[in-house]
Length: 129
Image 1: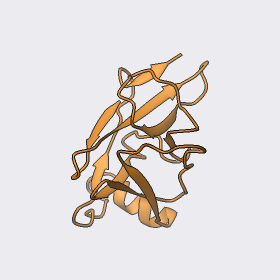
Image 2 (image 1 turned 180 degrees about the horizontal axis):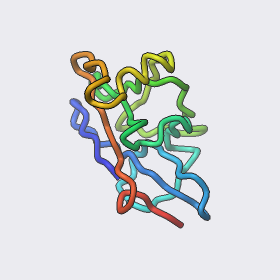
Image 3 (image 1 turned 90 degrees about the vertical axis):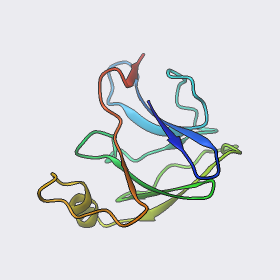
C-alpha cells in the first residue's frame, strides 16, 4: 500500500490485493485499512495493464483534491459513492507514450513537470487473501 498526499490535504491509498491466488488488482481508496477489500461502490480500480510494479507504475499528477491518472486504459470508477475527500480523472496516453515514460532509466522519457511515478512494490505491499 502506498499513501498519496494531495495538495488539498486529502489522502488517498494505492492498494494491491490478490484474492485466491488470482492476479493482483490495484485500486485507489479512501480507506487506510491495509487489507480492506476492493469496494466497487467506493474505490477506483486501475486497469490490468497498470499493476504498480516497476514496469507498469501509476503516472499521476494532482490538481487540488483531484488525482489525474495518466495511462493507456481507462479506470473503473466507483459504482455508487466515490470518496468525498478526493476525485480521480483519467488522461489517456497511447500505449507507446506510456511505455516511453515507464521504460528503463536509460530509455525512458522524462516525466512532464508535476507528474509523479508511483510504484507499489510487490511483497509486503500486497494483501493476499
